[in-house]
Every structure is written in structure tokens, then in C-alpha cells.
Image 1 (tube, rainbow, N blue to C red):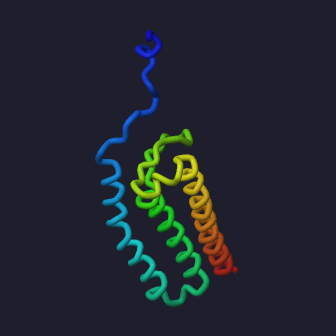
Image 2 (cartoon, rainbow, N blue to C red):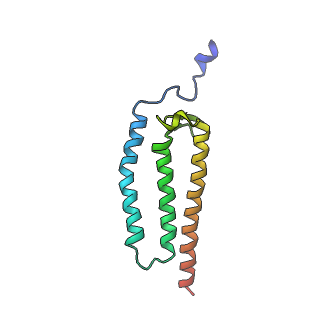
Image 3 (cartoon, rainbow, N blue to C red):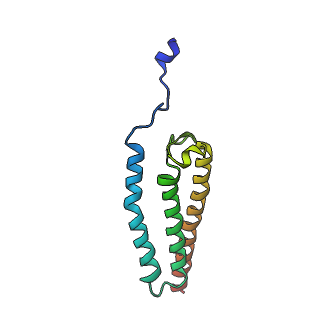
Amino acid sequence: NRVDLLMPAPCPETIPPYYTTSLHLIAGFSIPINLIGFYLVWFQSPGMFGYKYCLVYMQLISFLTEIHMSWICPGYYFFPMVGGYNTGEFFGQFISSHLSMTLWIFIFCFELAAGLCCFVYRHNAAAHISQ
């Protein structure tokens, strides 16, 4: 077909073989780093009374987002388009790519709220200092 020769498919048809391995390696390195972050915020941050909880919320939601994207339902997504392949060996068999992306966006919305919560708390703290 002449159209196929002029216009190749915009999205790759196969997933690179190294892709899921690299996602799992990144998650393997980030899990200890996230656990150290939880420990430092929770036990080694005296005097950060309410802000400590904002930071723990931010750390928890970021950790859940990363675990979802790298272990539970790793995907090979095509941004900015909401589409792609679900590459998970276990959950990928049971969850469609669309549902996986929907869950990721749902979790990511909590991450945006956590960042806003931290920003507003620090802004209010700085406003009280200048009074």
C-alpha cells in the first residue's frame, strides 16, 4: 500500500526488551531511598510539628506513584497521548492499559495535592514570621 510507505506508524509496535528490566532496577534502587526518606522525616525531624505530616503525605504518595509505574503496572506509554502498552507480567494480564493509566492519573492527582499542601503550609509559616 502506497500510504504505508509514506507514513510509518507513529507508535512503536513492540516494547524494547530492556524496558521492564530498567523499570524494575530503578524501583529496586528507589525503595531503600524512599524508606530512608520516611525514616528521616518521621524520626529525625524535631520541631517540624505539622509540616512533618505534609512531608510524610508527599513521600507516601510519591512512593505509591513510583511503585505503580515500575512494579504493579509498568507501562510503555505514548505521551502526550493517553495510550500505550501495559507491560506488567502479573497485573498486566488482568488490567487493561487504559485502566492502568487511569489509576496512575488518579494517584498522581493525590501527588499534586500533596505538593500543594506542602507549599501552602510553608507559605503560611513564612507569612507568620514576617508579622
